Structure formats: structure tokens, C-alpha cells
Image (tube, rainbow, N blue to C red; front, side):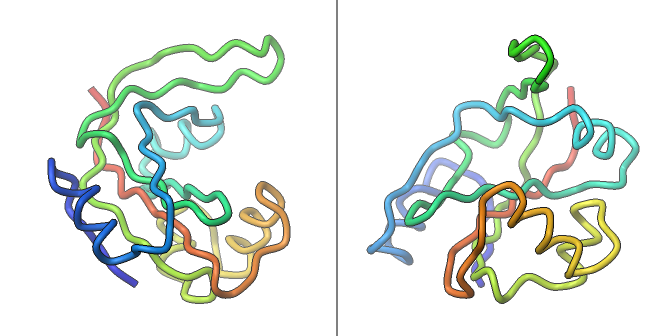
Length: 136
């Protein structure tokens, strides 16, 4: 597990630490309405990002976020969200603290949510956790 502050050198540091992985830079986030509501209610302070053989990182400390509207298939821009740091860890390193920060009650619930979104996960898969602070 490694944690990083979000700054201009983030991509360079992650390439150094994880040379075998491609890096995907998020210029914005598309977040489900339920997750936004949990964040606004201060029940959720992390956002999980994953794709096999990729490491997701934010393009900047502040990035725009959009609410995913599944009914209309249009995403609505809301505001900027602050990402204070990111943590990269193996799937099998997820713990109770991660679950609580994701607005859930236990590690098993977090695993179930991640696997329902991304499919069955191997223990060695790398997960990016964006630590969220506030919205402007």
C-alpha cells in the first residue's frame, strides 16, 4: 500500500513505484447519485477507481465531477471535488477502515460492492482510493 499527495509530480512518482502498470489520468469523475449523496452527508470520504492492469490517478487536486443519471444517460456537471490524496493498494489489503470511508459497514460489504461493479477480483489487483475532502 502506498499513499500519495495530489500534486504536479504525482504521475511521475507512481510510474516510478509501479513501472509495470499503465496510468490512467482522470480529468473528471463520473459518480453515481447515491455516492454523491453519501459524500454530501459526510458518510463517504473515498472513491474507488479500478480497471485491470491500470492505475487511476486524478489529473489535479481539484477536478470536476458529474452525476451519472442512468435514466436519461446524460451526466450532469455539478461542481469541483477536492482529492486530498490517493492510496494504491492490493485488493486483498482492503480493510474495515476503507469500508467505513466508502460509506459501508464492513469489509465484506465493500468487497461485494467492488465486485458487483468490476467483476470477480484477484487478490493482487491494484485499487486506487481517492480521498475526498470537499466540494466547491
